[in-house]
Length: 156
Image (cartoon, rainbow, N blue to C red; front, top):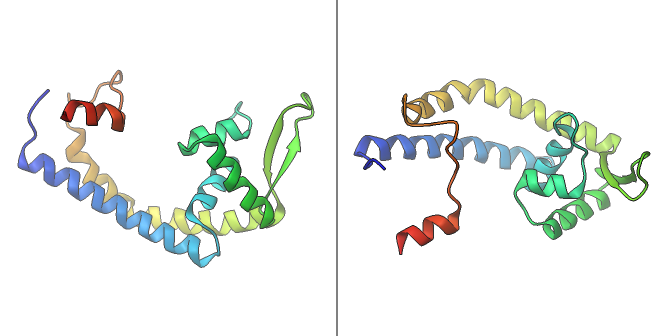
């Protein structure tokens, strides 16, 4: 593993700064709509689920990188707010799927439009901040991200 240079640290810091700026925008927009940021993310995950993957709690928890019980609590709050509802799958009545209500669809569409516009504006800056980190030869398709536990173990 190569040793990082000062410019590597500066590139990482700049990229994190640009991500944080976008996340700050996102958190404000979502809060102004009366939602928690995680609620918006879950609604977006439901709507944007890849083809062939059903919007079940397990899949949504995985896509959000949260525990199953945390996803259930989040879904309960969204359901109480009238943004999502649970429904049984037509082909397997044991399976519970999540769908956006009409209110959830409207709210998500408005927020996603704002996010899309912001990314069109901030995107070039984000890409420019990422490019120094993506130098040829630094990333390979086989590479995986180390977990926080692995990083902590290496530091001991």
